[in-house]
Length: 196
Image (tube, rainbow, N blue to C red):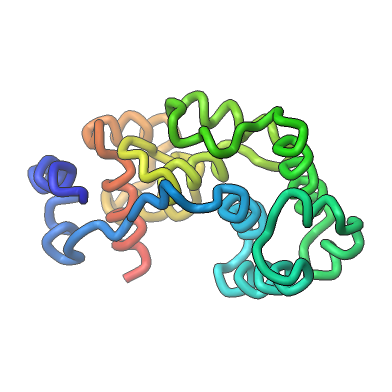
């Protein structure tokens, strides 16, 4: 899937050795899945470990008895959502997402047909969805090739480890220009290297 990206990045003195060490990038776009469920999962996962986020997500699915839909979410009162283990801000965010879809302010099924900038604009209009969540959606759900989440803590730490020095956010953005048009794949290797 990322053959061209890996071929291009293998020439980079920083990412090339990581491709040899970790093999193929494992990001797989999930174009034909339920974006609402994905975004609810992204909101729940903000600033939480994956394990904790998964527990809360499964509790929520249990509460609605199966697949998450905007209608089912809007049927629940705020306390029902809160009782699944999420903060009030996340309750408001998930409700706002569901309401925007119901009111046709967010055409969730068309996100994969929009440009990166348009997707960002649509998602950031939802309460509680910021740039980071929109970037994660672009990278891991839509599989967009050239996203660099410069405000991600893992990317910052991973870049420091990779270069053996701290960079300011602007310096890091400038440095990552070398990986265009495949910054998503380069980011995956930066994370992979940090976690190993």
